[in-house]
Figure 1 (cartoon, protein in one colour):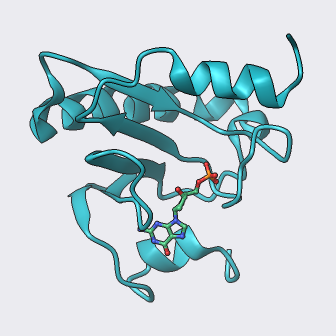
Figure 2: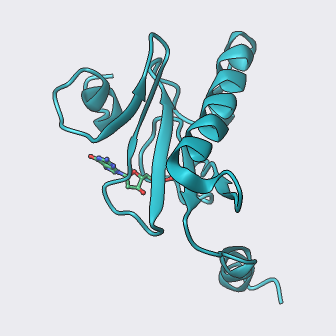
Amino acid sequence: MSDCIFCKIIAGQLPSKKIYEDDEILAFLDINPVTPVHFLVIPKKHIKSLMDLSAEDSALVGRLMFKAQELAKQQGCEEKGGRFIINAKSDGGQTVDHLHIHFLGGIALGASLLQTCLHTGKRE
Ligand code: DGP
């Protein structure tokens, strides 16, 4: 899509710090890292969000997840892990309408992010 930031990164029209690329997938460092290790894994196909998948995308999403965990290990997070996040649409806080998996690692997150979400959602 011509007005999509991530499609422009894929096309090389915007710079990014790439950590992986193949025919279907691109991974690059988040421009505003919130943890010492923070990267994004995206499909090259423009899919707006996880809630805009078609059945034919299921294998691609499986590949995205597999690549995300592989890269997390390569980035030094194999032993301690991290958090894989997919924000979807407005209530999910998605700001870039191109499906992406965040990986956050390199620091002990505990349950703090989840608690923040619950508090923001006034569920307690
Ligand atoms: P989300 O809220 O899940 O839609 O997060 C989108 C993320 O994308 C956010 O953490 C910042 C990142 N981001 C936005 N624009 C750019 C960009 O131009 N380059 C890079 N590397 N990351 C970007």
